[in-house]
Image (cartoon, rainbow, N blue to C red; front, side, top):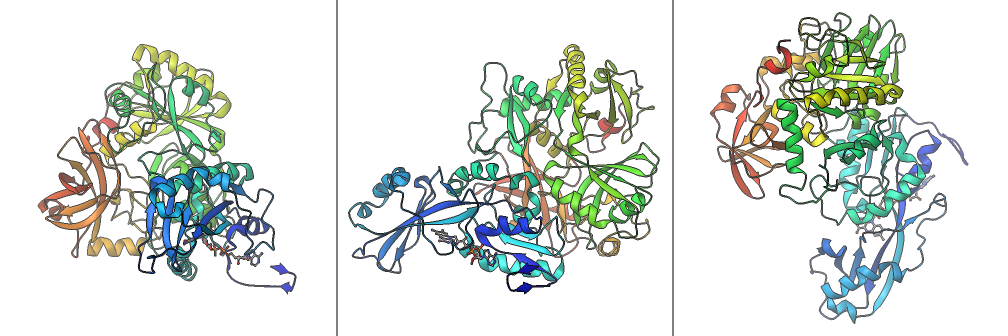
Length: 627
Ligand SMILES: Cc1cc2nc3c(=O)[nH]c(=O)nc-3n(C[C@H](O)[C@H](O)[C@H](O)COP(=O)(O)OP(=O)(O)OC[C@H]3O[C@@H](n4cnc5c(N)ncnc54)[C@H](O)[C@@H]3O)c2cc1C
């Protein structure tokens, strides 16, 4: 690195430049999406009776916190509409400088403050402090190694909790650097969760208006950001919006979460109970189980690995066998040296040296760079991110074959087009890659249409779908369907510290394959047994809802927590999954022998535990549907 005082060489760089971190990152081509906002507090004149032993008070509804400050009260604000600052870059010499007072901006929160702590209405204000602090697009800080540059680490974007977070953040980052991986699951704050577009200055400025206040806002289930929306839109977006889609945002993508019927506003009404969309999503769920539904899954990340050594690279990082006939699709985990799951993907062998890899939307900036780094210098293979090249449609449900047969002449019979195979077929005027896979546990095909052909494919499907009562289905239904089927979700149920054996994915690992990442650890685990195991749960009571993080009790002892959950409309109760821990190996007999409860808002609700899925445990509907 070249500085005013000469050139510095170092093995590891940590960009911990606070609100300057975005600019410093840009020097190295590293994206650190954050933006400064003005951040305010006041200190009153001394108040009789105020002493150092007073507790800190937070009033989330009033967007204010209060604490003692040398015999006076300090009140700090997280107002719902914030003031972004430093739009043209942060001056290099700004440190410890104060920004001007802005009484008008704080008027609404001042009113609440004077009601909550009336003494502040008369005590007089000694200090009005306004200083900038940096905020990130999702209010979580940025930690870890940059996907763009090896050994370039970031610790920034502390969203006004940087002092309280500093001890832990420093500790885990130090371990991350020394060991080359995070010491625990830190996906929530991992720099790689961000997408490159999020470094866009206008996006950051617009989102920062909302970010500050969110720290004190109600964190409703399914809550969506209001600002900086409509960033990434599928080529079908306007059609889906016209059909009543209520969109949620993931990695900048607008994704239909549920569809409002005619006459209903596609808007969330948040609560901790059944939200306004519950019944609409249930109908989408049922359509997929009993008939046929159509999902826009364009947001899925898509990578093309090709070249003479592509197979060797993939077989080294995948737990499953990738050397399969052309046209076969392999469900597999990408593994690290510890046997941990770096990604949960499908690998589609397009020909001898070309493989199409599909992953979740949020992992585009993680899986792509990670895979890229697995290609060794002497190996001849390239990785290309082809996410934007294809629109992806999921045609799912028992009538999927009958419907698709109306728009293609391809033989879709079970014999000609078995589960986990893929080939190019004609749909309407387009050539589409059809893959017989499912994330919902039904007969179905995932269709990848080159983006400019997607509208034609969609129109053909919708027109033919009329005779089948085809229903558009959203991601809330997808989540409900996959939960019942026990399909895992990376980032919730599995991550880089969980092995496939712990996650119940041993079926997707070929331990008899020659050397591959993590094989030794997995062999050792297989011999010794695992002391934590992902288990499916269904509440016995159909009323309560599950989200995630609910404690799991086994025979009165807390043994884990729910990693993800959703209401299972076919099961007829909330379903979720979570790891059960034990000092001895967690076997099927151990799981069966326990009495389980899931704690929902302090109430323990009896639950069924199962190592298989609650719905169609033998996957007959997926693999053996005659036709
Ligand atoms: C009004 C206000 C109240 C707050 N209250 C609290 C609170 O109660 N509790 C809490 O936990 N947090 C609070 N915070 C937030 C907290 O102060 C920050 O989160 C924290 O200071 C961020 O630490 P940092 O190390 O990431 O960045 P900083 O503290 O900003 O440090 C970054 C450093 O990088 C240096 N730097 C920048 N560019 C370069 C360069 N090119 N070369 C060399 N050095 C460079 C800067 O000079 C600076 O010293 C508050 C913030 C504000 C503004």
